[in-house]
Length: 424
Ligand SMILES: Cc1cc2nc3c(=O)[nH]c(=O)nc-3n(C[C@H](O)[C@H](O)[C@H](O)COP(=O)(O)OP(=O)(O)OC[C@H]3O[C@@H](n4cnc5c(N)ncnc54)[C@H](O)[C@@H]3O)c2cc1C
View 1 (cartoon, rainbow, N blue to C red):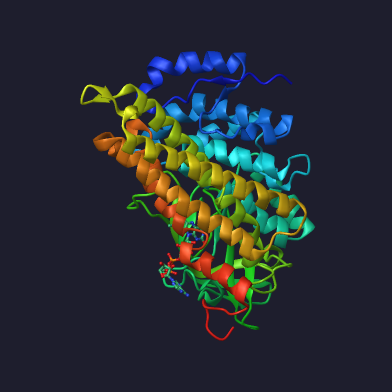
View 2 (cartoon, rainbow, N blue to C red):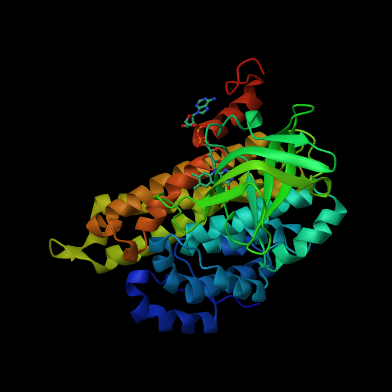
């Protein structure tokens, strides 16, 4: 397939009315290659991966970008666009689809994140974490029961591990599962649980009271099923990833049948840890898309805006910051690319995924801060395309293990000494 090498830039919200038509035209002619793809990473992808990248980019620019600012401000998620995402082939169960390469999944995430990190996180929690909890730990019957509606986004997957008082020390959660005659009673609280409020299928992790091990349970939260003792409240006061519906959940003797216990999750290692070891690599992909976006917006802005009678782009200090964003983005992509190869070979270690997550969010954090700075005051105005990435990167730096927690996982792997939990 011919790849048109057109550098047309990306439509920042502040200029979208003026440039939108031109970009859509370019999309019709070929691919609007991002100037952030400085080392021509498209060239490292298969034709199918490239096609997917630009199909998702077009969807995000046309359908999501024009509405996202409002949804972010209001702390709502545009669930109504998900059928369209399904229609372009990005099914909710794409991480369970053998015809889709790991790299293709990664470029989908990059492209979602390039327009909005909340959108990418919501999709990742659904497809790579919640749904994968059922895929990796569930029975064949559970997969048949839950995966089809999750694939079509008729229900949305969530993963409930973190608690108000237990975060990094996740193997010591306090929520309990007590055996009854025909099922289990869940008691406890979960905090920060993304996607749990809307037609949700929630994978809940709780300590089995009988043997003290972590087990997984499927709890549904939708308007058609009243679950006694379940309360789900959206956390609306957050400054970051505002569009993701993060929830505070309480379980007060919530009954779950034996059929909804995930049989392959018998402890922390075979349960949440197995899912997170898989998904953490993908969390490290999201900052790449965000940094592509802030680089594109910054380059355009600095070439357009003048101070002291000359273009901002002509100042040495400005160029230095711009190049740092570009360099970080190239490094992040290369590290993730190698991680994906190792995952495909079945050779990736927990330490390696943690290294990718921690380094890419650290470099990403530097990029969004530099971009925010380069925009001056406009750097805190959402319309200019960097402010939302700036605040969103903070949460991505912390979720799925904080930067330090991930560093300590690498440290444990390379030294054989655990500094996370002494003596283990
Ligand atoms: C926007 C957002 C979305 C999220 N989505 C979900 C979700 O869908 N499902 C879910 O289950 N969870 C979710 N989380 C929770 C997330 O995984 C936790 O916030 C994260 O694991 C950190 O836990 P904590 O916030 O309790 O911080 P804490 O564990 O209290 O850590 C506080 C500080 O102490 C440091 N620290 C902790 N332990 C050590 C140690 N051993 N050595 C050195 N320093 C240490 C940390 O690095 C951090 O700086 C989400 C969080 C956010 C912010």
